[in-house]
Amino acid sequence: MSDQKNENRNDALERFFQQKAEEYNISYNEEDWLKLEDRLNNLDQQRRRRTWRRLIAAAVVLAFSILAYLIINNQLQIDKLNRRLSNNQPTQVHQPSTPDAPPTESEELTNSHSDGNTDQEPTLKSSENETIASKEQKNEPNPASANENNRIQYKNYSLTVKPMNIVMATLGFDVHSAKSSDIKLIKTKNSSVNALATVSHSKPTLVHSRDNSTKHNVVRASLGLVMGPDLSTAGSMAHFYDPGSKIGVTLDYNFNSRFAITGGIIRTRTLYTAKGGDYHPPIGYFSNGSVPGKTVADCVLLDIPVSLKYNLLQFDRSRFYTTAGISSYIMLNEKYSFHYDNYQSGLKREWNHKTGSRYWLSNASLSVGYEFDILNHWSLRAEPYLRIPIKEVGWGKVNLYSMGTVVSLNYHFGH
Amino acid sequence: MFYAYGMSITLRYADSRDQAASILNDAFMKVFTNIEKYDMDRSFKPWLRQIVVNTAINYYHRTKNQQQMEDLKTAGSQLGKEDHIISGISYDEIIEMVQQLTPGYRTVFNLYVIEGFKHREIAEMLDISEGTSKSNLAKAKRNLQSILEKNFSS
Image (tube, rainbow over all chains, first blue to last red; front, side):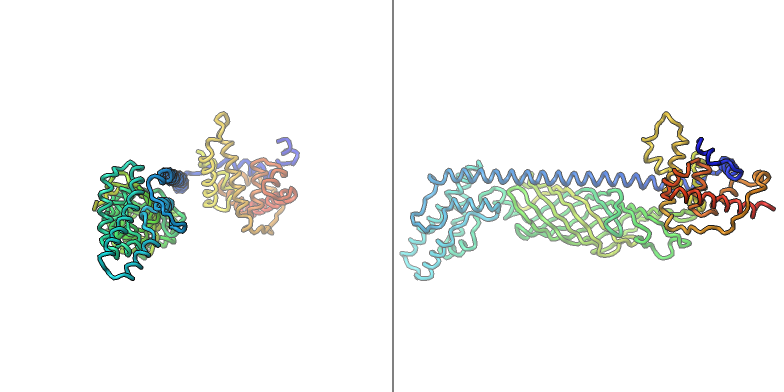
């Protein structure tokens, strides 16, 4: 401050303003505090959103880590199984003596496992079946060929069943009981040489897994209880607010082991913010042209999705799938709070009604999921989803984006 | 209490009351979000004052590209009747006078006369030369004298 004197600060004008600057008597303004309060609330929400985003990211990383572990573990078990099969091969399987003979059944079985495709069963060799078919085409039916057919059928039966016994024994299954059912299956399919040749080309199914033997072929429908968080935003994928929630039921109908149609009804509480330009209430609602800078929505709606489901990857007890479809929204309750950049008394601050308005086919729906069988009839699913607006919804006519992850417990019918 | 104190500072740096409230709003946000950095052994008011002044300077930097640094051409003579003028002018009128200055003059005037910074410090804070700081101060004082004489000398 000694320097200040050197700079000759104390002229009359400076003294005058220094003195007056200390004589302030400023009254408190409530609006200033309300603005500050809004900003503090927004800051708090941003922090909560950041925390949620981190939690979701952590959950996704954890989920993928678990999936990776399961997949690697599954692969290791398959490799172990293959090694056991290779060790058992010399004593269990008859080796063809011709030099250009096709691979053995054990090799085929190994290849089938290595592909990780449990839908595909150990197949009969196509060259052998082609031989059978050509024989059948060239030779008219006669008593001699009947014996040949039986021999061929027996040969195929024995070649097919022996490695299966090894597989099932390795897995700890009851070989004798499994054998009898397998024999029935083969006998049914190979009732004639023609049938054998035809079925062989189309890779007849011979089950080697208890799960596949039942679920993939028999399950027709699944009923699920779903729940999870919902993050929504209006106008763009940029302004998420607090997470809402989803809870409801879904029903799947399987066309085959890959395709299914799925529908449901899900009660959803959605929380989002909309900027002034993204929110469109009825014209003239906001008086004096004072449009809120931000609208905070707290809505309860019924989400009715209808989707096509496709199994991308199939494992013994789990599968990855994807869905694509369309959702309809029925608004049960809509509550909107309006926040103004410059609030003046008399401006509307809230709108809250039980509307019941319906918006059919309003949002496209995309998801990927992972399903894990926990019991014979039961499975768990984790399904991250995205809803993209097709048309505006709600009293404020907003383009509503939603994302989240639903977890579901499913019961499978048709075993 | 702190509201009035904060406003007494921001009003001097702002063009209007709304702008002053906005700067104070920013300053209080900084106070709330950095409250853990406050040293409880020291007085709160200087800490608040430092934040408010810094916020006002930040505001000056944000808006200086939009400012038209036009000089009022009403440079008057030296203030000769200040003694009897002082007693008749209210705080609000003083603030109005300061707010009539261009942002560049006003900020230098406040930092030098009211806050007590040196020209070298002001030059660093506002990213201007020391000479510009001195020049702005001189022009600010001339303009204020002119405004005073124009409005209160009768």
